[in-house]
Figure 1 (cartoon, one colour):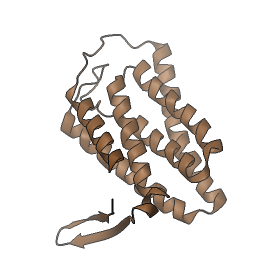
Figure 2 (cartoon, helix red, strand yellow):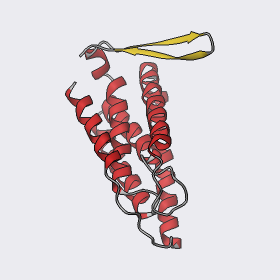
Figure 3 (cartoon, helix red, strand yellow):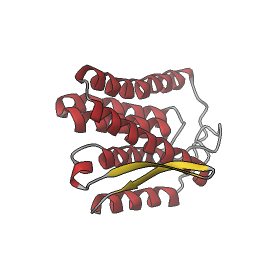
Figure 4 (cartoon, one colour):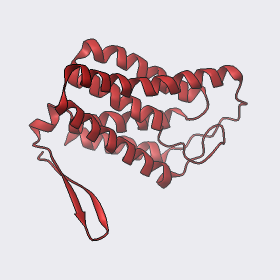
Length: 187
């Protein structure tokens, strides 16, 4: 209960505070750094999936998929609800950072599932992803911090031992014109 309250407070704080957008022209160097961050953001989930396949960790596949789906859903919804302009003024989908939320989901999953020897390098790479999003003027630090909180929170909800301790159950639900998932847990 404490972790969810802290994450909810942090997300609310991030949505309430808006820093002025920086008006800096994007140089070719910034674009190159931003591209390297894009690549790293894709490598982390690929590394998690590779670990799952090598270890034949089918329970981990389920947990990682649920964490990933939750991360994508929450991040996408917040992008449209908050409607914050990007620092480079390219659109109004700055908050929170999707690259960072997905990368943090993968890095946290790798650490939770396979231990610190694999999680530590993943954490270093995810820090780089967040930095590239700010340096490349796609996000400010609030966007990146919120993305990190969403990714970490989503992973802790579904990845053992948290899910086991709180008796997490996820059930598909379908009805007249709707579909989705029902999730329940004890605190």
